[in-house]
Length: 103
Image (cartoon, helix red, strand yellow):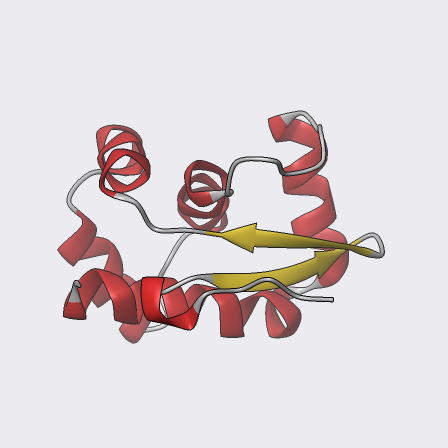
């Protein structure tokens, strides 16, 4: 059963049969931004269909909510690829919308 809090801008994604919750906290977004650069540019790239897979994985990785099943970043990235972009897009859209809207 999902415990996603839409008011917080959370999103969920099932990877390898396990639901993962993503929470775009200030700390998570700052950590992602330190790796991939300005988040507004990332949003623009996504809107133009030009977001890089590595940037997508980085953003999702840093936004994983506490209590996520233990996995390495490499296994997380592989699970993202296995799930496919069509499965990942709704969670990404939720996070990018939250980045733009803030709360």
